Image 1: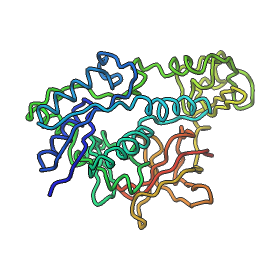
Image 2: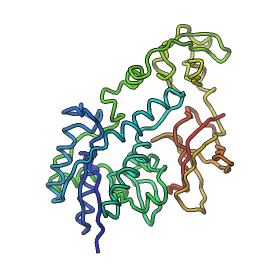
Image 3: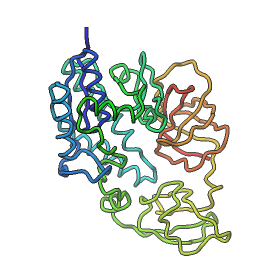
Image 4: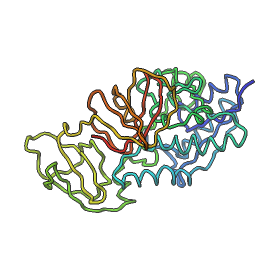
Length: 352
């Protein structure tokens, strides 16, 4: 007997093919598009942004082709509170958030899943590129599109009610299948920017909400080498857009080493000063097998993986890397893997 499945349909090719596969497998599928913006634009600009009126119409057309019921759920207020306001407050605190990860945690697999279960659905299906078998999350076969990192914050309970139908397919295969099925989104560009910053100007978005506050840019010795209009406009590891007045003595590029929101100070230095070998994390979530080997950690979406060891502490865990990593920013997730399998995640607090 098939499951009652709620298919989250963004208006893109991945979620459309995911819904089609679930319906073809014999499940009772209902499509839902999440209206996440209180004032959605009419059209996307290429691959920038999502959640436009155009996207909702694309999702509806895909549902019509598949032959499933379709609804739009207004999640704008919850999205504003749990994702957008969280994004702004994290930058204000000198951290670097991942809004896609937070959206999965707070919207798609909290608010949406809770409502779906209350309405009698058995599971929520999405177009994420990741494998899920027997409640265990693993990497997609398409390494370039793998999204297991941004799903690493989900709990075992949430994963037990999730379906990711695309984990065994490459993006090229998904597009080819969409074309065969007659889905008009087959060639639609992927949305690869922060969905609520459609013009891609994160610094401008933050400045509008947090205001300008001039502060110093200093080197490792504390000497002032420039100024800025708000520490919230920077992230650890950043190289471009620093507007430094004086070049480094060795002529090499400088990178953001740390951000101090209280004093509104940004510290810069050479790339070598970014190297860290020990990471302190909080809010651990264990969602994979308890026995594992070949342990690695990923510290940013689509970032490198590092062989590591970890030790649980009273308020989180400490991760020791086998080789140094650079650009490790507080607020990002550290997702632990055993081979290709996710075993858990935690939020980066500090690194040294």
